[in-house]
Amino acid sequence: MRILVHDGFFSIQSLPSVDREEREGYSLTPASRLLLKEESLNITPLFLVFLDPIMLDPWQNMSKWLRNENDINPFQTTHGKMAYELAVEDPKLYQSINEGMASDGRLVASVILKHCKGIFEELDSVVDVGGGTGTFAMCIAEAFPNLSYINFDLPQVVKGLEGSKNLSFVGGDMFETIPKAQAVLFKVFIPYYTCLLTLKSLII
Image (tube, rainbow, N blue to C red; front, side, top):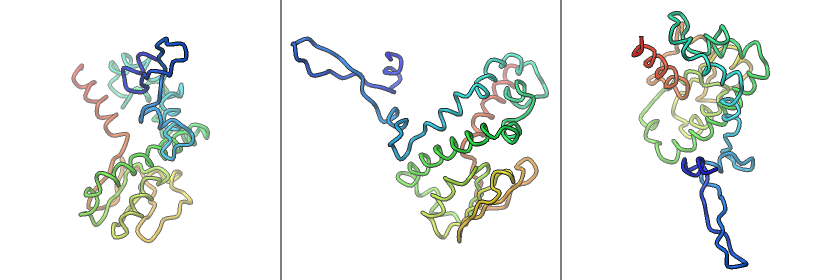
């Protein structure tokens, strides 16, 4: 708990004393409140994805991955395939990832719409690469009705999803082609992969 307090996840506060003895207790901070079920921006599903053994095991194989010239990331070294490929075969993992990305999308959209609306105000079209089931896309498309928004992900992810007047769901493989738009949006996975690949190139 002390470590979590140091990291700002909880805070320490003085408790009312009935016997004149000073006591302390722990209270929630804005960060830890995001894990409460009653919070509209609850991101517990995202935490559950990161804490899944399937996602944690690759960290145990970092040294093996760094010595491997063929695998793109530690996940591929550990499981023999990419995360999105494994998710197609594992319905539980597939659902977990989609729910996690949806919770992240709601949080990011709320921050952008409150503090960074100018990002989208000057754009005519956007393609959201790896947009999942479109939680983030729907928030942005609704807030900017004149913006043409393409939510792009694997065919099995966007299959059956219905768009709106300015939102469309397109299936495909980003390693082959990406729909044309004025701006391309990468929300989650690119920084993670970039950091890992940069680390690997520096060491090798």
